[in-house]
Figure 1 (tube, one colour):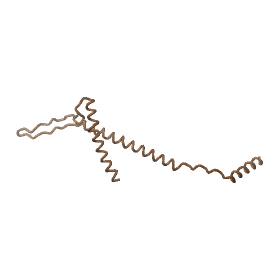
Figure 2: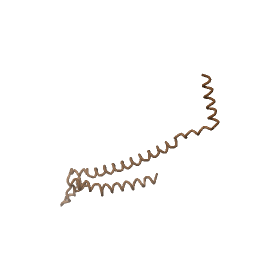
Figure 3: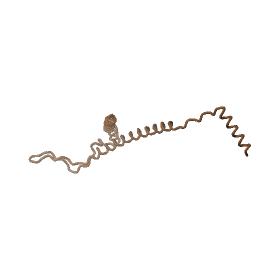
Length: 126
């Protein structure tokens, strides 16, 4: 289980890098923007420190980062779905092979003879 956690963490980093470094820049070029990371709705603008006043940080809703996280999640969910689907298909195939009935053995000469005798006796009884 520990190996799964470590591999999962590394996979998460790979997907995050894929989204941040490959997918989002391509989407930014297509949409003509400078990147989803910079998309935000500013509630209160920030101000630099002035004489006697403290600096005010910007208060904003970063919906661009939210979009990136959604794309991360969708890619990870798709990969897990595909992996589980193939795993379940493989397990189902193995189970079907195990449960398949063995073919009936060929009757021996003695069994064939007894079957013929039974059939003849049934015909005579009618």
